[in-house]
Image 1 (tube, rainbow, N blue to C red):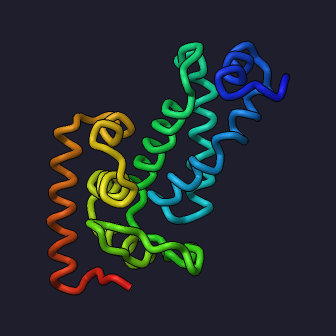
Image 2: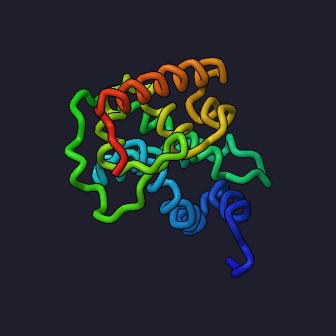
Image 3: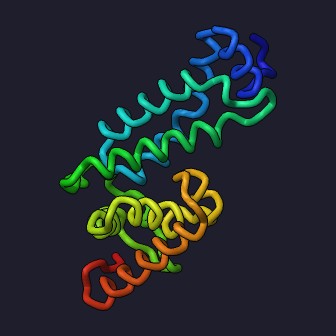
Length: 180
């Protein structure tokens, strides 16, 4: 494989059974996907497990990605849906000790919040609302992309976002979540 090759070429080769090309795809997309999944499920071990499952499902679905199409959005959707499924199944909140010290504050509605505080509060939301809140309000993804990632309508995204923002504002007023 040449140096000028990238994800589309690796995808084509992986579809033909080239395991090295598939490994290159995984290495290429691992970090951005881990960051994304970790912001939804802030436990490194769980995020790793979710990514492994997502990569396995991606491998089984290689033929669904059209030649010449960027495979990242497809893989990203699988990873987000696996993270959402994980949230629906997990009832207890994680300890949040794994969040890196000194991690950059997360911004919501223009205000900075310490990640652990924000995640603790977000964990009080139902799973779909939590994922919509994190993807839309914290990560800043547009409604259409959130809807596509979760496999729901934009109306559903807006409804859950509105309910999450309302709950967030109440928590701010009541001191349930505070800026640093």
